[in-house]
Amino acid sequence: MRLSTLFATFGLALMMTLVLPAQTVRVIFVSGEASLQRPDEAALRPIVKGETVIIGTRIVTGADGRVVLTPMPGVKSIVTPNTTLLLESISENRTSETNVTHQAVLDLKQGAVVSDLQKPEGVTYDYSIRTARGLAGARGTTFTVGMNPAGIQTIVVAHGSISINFTDGSTAVLTPGQLSITKTNGDTQSVNNISELPPADQAIAQNWTETTIAAIATALEAGIELDPTALQNALDAARSLGITLSPELQALVDRVLALLAIPSTTNEDLDTETITEVVTETMTEEELLPGFNSFADFVATLNETQQAAFAEIIEVGFPDAPSLEGKLKDGKFARDLVKSIDLYASLNEGERALLVDLGILGDNNVTALGADTVGLRTLINAYYFLDAPPAELLNETDFPKIRENIDPLIGSNFFFPGIGDSSGVTVYNIAFHTEGSSLHVGATRKLIIDNTGYEHDTFVAGYDNESYRTGFVSLHASDLIDLNNTRFGSGVGSILIEAATINLTNITFQAGTNVDLNSTLGKANFGSSKVGYVNFISNVKYDTTVLTNANFGDSVRGTNADATGGHVKIGVLGSPPPPR
Image (cartoon, rainbow, N blue to C red):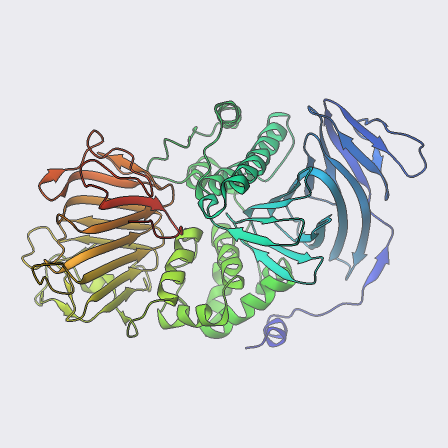
């Protein structure tokens, strides 16, 4: 079903555009040293709260200066310290009696603008930040564009998608939790974790990510009305990027979370829920993202890139589109769908086809909605480059604790797409055996296996020829891999486990086996389960030694752990493999 057909089906019509006078841009907050100069003024002067900003106005903030503008209804542009920008353009176009398109471009010379967009019903946004490196546009998101004195541009995306049109004519799309750095020569690197960047660029990424969180937290503390989840989205983005907040910024965050009556969740204390889940539970139903009464209403909130991606998703994944329309009345479902659309938009043609091959997309399957974005992206990347036969698709509910046939499954590639309500259901008494050297088992959201009392080795690959073990086992899921009493065959010499969170209980890694455990934070935790960590819950051994905080510690990528001699390594999800 093509996009035009989709719109026609749900009654979306194109209207003639009526150009109206430019909307009013006002200053709703100012603190510290902050100055303004209109085109008809000879010099900078102090900004006054409540005054109007016209096209061509220059705004300059000092080391402690902050300004919040409203360039269009529901949009807050937070001008951070040491920033210079111009209001390049502003306009308002009415496409019908009830639908209005607002347009605004801020020209950022130096510093940063943190943008928070909340679209009212019947409103379409064309909101962009221009720099010397290009134009970053969004129509419903929280993001930061920063320019340092050396002319290096950084964009941090906390929510939604950002389309970038570079000055050399190239384009890019950034999704939640992604960050891009563009040098003065036009070279751009987009990453999911700062470990992918050179050390100097990591410092730049750290600075602008912390700037994002500080701007949002300071605005909330000052009483500025922002998206209720803006701070949590920014904190989630920092976590997935592998950034630890400074003590001063963490103190500010804790203070604001307390002010909002939201439990403080620090970098070191992500318990059993994500920050976003914590804040969602504390919000009333009215404060959650509103749903949509019709398919057309939802589509109208998407930008062109999102609309094209969504049309493909409908075409290949939802033959019963009206059933999807009904789900859009749930605001959380709609929010999760936008995240999935943004991820889909960033995939190439082969990766999109892979979603269908793995059963993640198709037959009205909505399991991927709400999945950990970095985890799902890592899973897609792993399977895209996988040299293996097509995956055999399995259903978790076919493996209850009591069943008749408990013989091992024979093959080299297995996947649980999580159709229906099966994602997250514990799989019992299951074993995967291959006669080859490689075995791959994955799940869209959660791979939970409990083989307590089961006699077979869980993962069998390769062979042991007394000199070395040839088998390789890889396990992938976006959100969680939870293994209890699972065993690796004697021929397995290499193991890769990747998910946002990894839980291990009653597991033994054979001496000499190379094990890579990659989670969102890339850190070890012992005795409990914490989101984003590799959790050694109980009785996890390397050879005969139980791994503890004392003898294994917080092993990070590339370092040797005493108890394993460097054979077991913990890394950040989506990072390159460690050296050995």
